[in-house]
Image 1 (cartoon, rainbow, N blue to C red):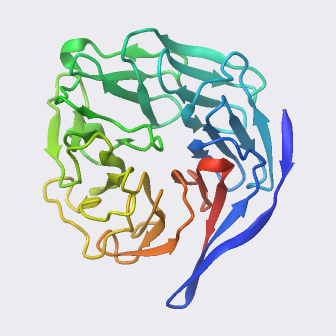
Image 2: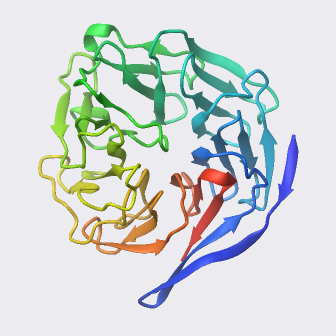
Length: 342
């Protein structure tokens, strides 16, 4: 384990009315690592994960990090991580074989809790409703999305039977861009969680609360048709849904990169002023407005999801807010870790 001291400097400060939004850059000392997994437990505890088998943990709000390299996984890319406290976290690796590992001692040791050798298997993202219930989505196999679930905090995972896995169109898949294309839904008697897709078509799959309840499939007005296009992330706040994406190969293009619903997915609209370019992650930063990031930089919404303002050109992959607290962190390529303040 190796620690690096915090080195913070202001990357950008854009005046928005009386406030200045800033992203403070944390020197992670991991310049050859790309981070896409990020979980912020509270204002002090955060975990990141990424390429070259790298997992990082801070217990002091980013002032210092402990860098972990789970033994035997040095070449794996951990695209998503879910942390519950300073000691327990679950990391998901993309590509084959499908791997999910868990630590309960702060990262000193890791246990493989899911491993699947199957041609074409590729896990994309996880989401947890609480410290027990979680789901994970993967790219389609035989035109059916791969879904697994846990009810014991990730100690064991169960695969969905092939007949009940959601159907995919040819060329349709998910993006392992930020671990946020699958989310639990609150206050809906019909659906427990949903996930967004891209590629040949962009959809939102709404999964029934039980296997006996019907699912719903919503086609999204998001840029699609190419394997680099489509929905990458969605954020849920009650009945308010926001979906962002775009084209990661043409990341400055803004056309049809976002859509939102204010009534639980019944009606969808496009923003009057969309976020700048391709976005791989979006979250609610408070009850009204959002923050989104990607290769085209970082934007904040200023009138709910209707209008957006660009605040930084710095490229990040993922942004997350503390589950218990107010801290917002970002992570991306080149070992970049940032903190958003206003």
